[in-house]
Image 1 (cartoon, rainbow, N blue to C red):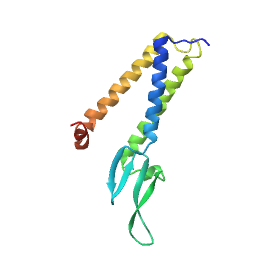
Image 2: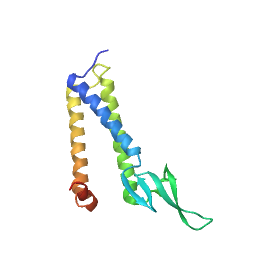
Image 3: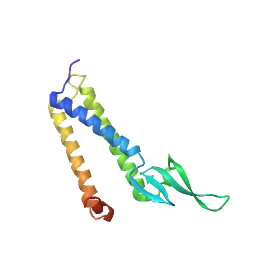
Image 4: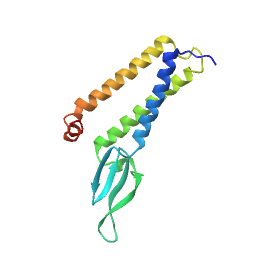
Length: 152
């Protein structure tokens, strides 16, 4: 099979695919925030949660549901910020997969990606990562007390 990528391009394609897969797995896993509630370990992500409190209608008590699951609907996500995060992160993972799969196809199909297009795609990935890191650390991450305690 002919390839339109150089050795550096093939390494870029493989690393892009690994990063896209890791990002998607991280997006779908509910372990973004960990803690405890009612003496039970609790974890949740943007649209999944593990061990969450629920009101029992028959006894009128709050009980812990000890399994992982997603929210029943998009409206069930607790806050507007988490809803925005779910949409933006989901779109980001989709774009990562699109670029990574296109790059992997270029390993097998000649003339799919030109040198200029490959450099532009790498530049877009770099700018996106720099922006994502900047938004996390300076857009609210470093000012958040929990984040600053993690880095001390």
